[in-house]
Image (tube, one colour):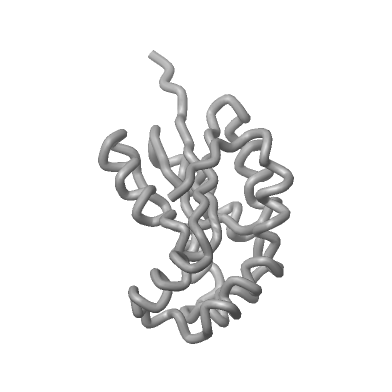
Length: 155
């Protein structure tokens, strides 16, 4: 019997709850979670947020690595894509019917609180700088391009 691959892409601004939501979704659906920042670290050799947010030119390599990881599993939740080209590469490879998209929204004050409360070692820049650099990577463009495809969830 041929199994259909199910891929869920979880988007949102920094500290919108992507990781927490992806973990819960994986638990419920028995899917494998793939975190884009882990892929970016592996491809780029960089570790801090200030470095990771300067990897926009690695989108094809990141896409190829993501595809390799996704192909290992039947059900996958991918969180943290910030570039539309990576989304298109996944949709083109696996087909739109196999890719679901979720956009998580959280108020700026809640996101800022979460950012400073989590105290993650890789966060070597301010919340405002991290937010701005995600915009430079193209996160708002992802939101705009795929707004008719994703389900928006207030978190």
